[in-house]
Image (cartoon, rainbow, N blue to C red; front, side, top):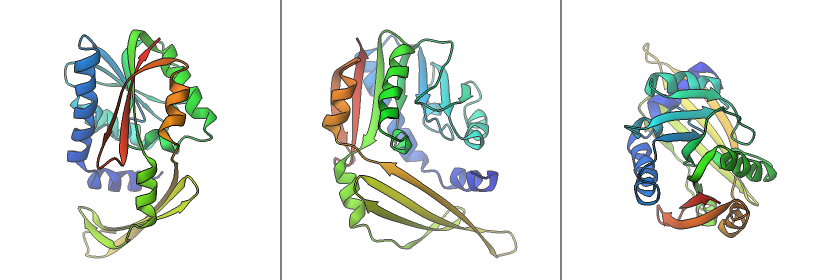
Length: 230
C-alpha cells in the first residue's frame, strides 16, 4: 500500500466505530480480567482502536509498514511491530491479546488462523484473554444484496464495490481524492476477506482456550469471542 493511499484511509477512518470496537473489548477485559495491564492488538492498522486503551501498556503489530508509521503517531506510547499475526514472535507476555474489525479475515489460508491462535496462546500470561472479533455469515449474505453508490468522504469521494464468491468477500475500492486545485486523483485498493462459520472457529479455539463468551452485535453481522488461555 502506498503512503498516499494510507493517508486517504486515515482521513476517512470512522473514529466513532473505532471507539465502539475498543469499548466492546474493554468491557470484556473489565469483566473477565480486570487486573490486566499489558495488551497486544493483532492487526493494529492505523492505531485508532488501540488509542482508547488508556492506562494499559500497549503493543500492536501489523503487516503494513505504512500503517505502522501512522499508528506510531496516533499511539505514541505504544510498542509497535511490523509482523503478521499468524507467525509473530515478541519477547513479551500479555494479559490480553485482541483483534477487531475484519483483520483476521484477510489472513489465508485457514491454517494460518489456527497458527494465529497458537501464537496468541504462546504469548499470553496464565489465564490471559484472547479476544477475537470477526464478521458472520450474515455479514457475507448482506453484501450479496448491497447497493453500491458513489459516496462523499472527508477526502473526496469513494466507490466501494464488493463481490461475494463462496466464503470470499472481495473489495474493489476506488477513491477520488480531492486536490487543492479542485481536481481529483484516483487511488485504488483491492483486498479479499474470508468468512468462516462461528462454530468452526469456536471448535479450533477450544483446542487452546476456554470460550468464556460469544457476543453478537451490529445486528448479528459481527461476533466477538472471549477466550481464556487453558
